[in-house]
Image 1: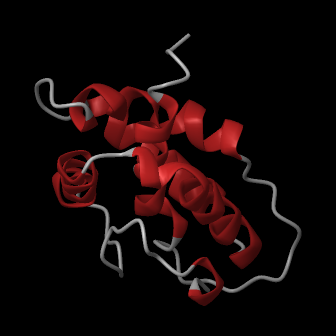
Image 2 (image 1 turned 45 degrees about the horizontal axis):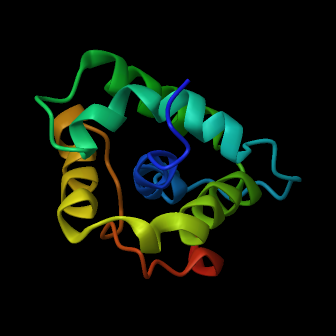
Image 3 (image 1 turned 60 degrees about the horizontal axis):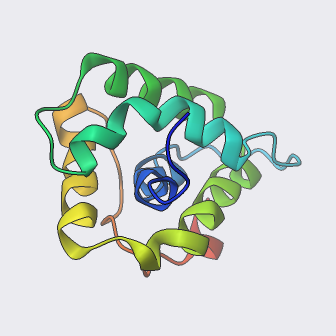
Length: 121
């Protein structure tokens, strides 16, 4: 299990998935911070600055995108990021923002600690 101090850095990656899907089903959120953590854990090394994005990171991102079909799910994932992104460095946020392009995942917003979760549909 990863050090809890590293968890906030991983959650920056959540922003990648928090608004990536544009469907608008109105359901209760089933995507939790635990779900996000589990799916994006392979991305953590890259976000921390070691090496390249592993294929498991891209697989996890795509899995999370598939799971976050409802607006409530995307907003829930976003809120996980908002709660901890302030602890990440600018460089870590920048590296997390590169993951969608590397993984060829279409993300319709800029990765930022200032993302407005309420506007994610």
